Length: 101
Image (cartoon, rainbow, N blue to C red; front, side, top):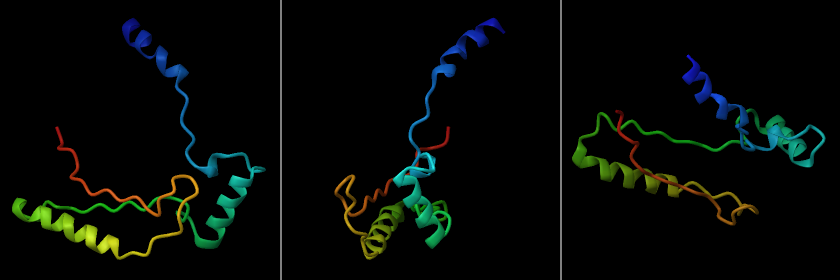
């Protein structure tokens, strides 16, 4: 039990990262903009869109074609204006999930 207590000591100094502007103080400009977007477009409008494709029913040989098709379909979605933070209109990654162990 003592070993477990000693191993948990570093957890007390953990500092979570900045999640998004919704975590800012209500008086900040970023938080006000975040709240206005959420009010206008609904919950989740400020977050990223994550697409997950279940490949379990797709034969192994057809999975690369499925990834290519997903890239093509996602590539037809109009890009938002360039982000002032990263300078890229959108970021897309298509990769297989890590295997379960």
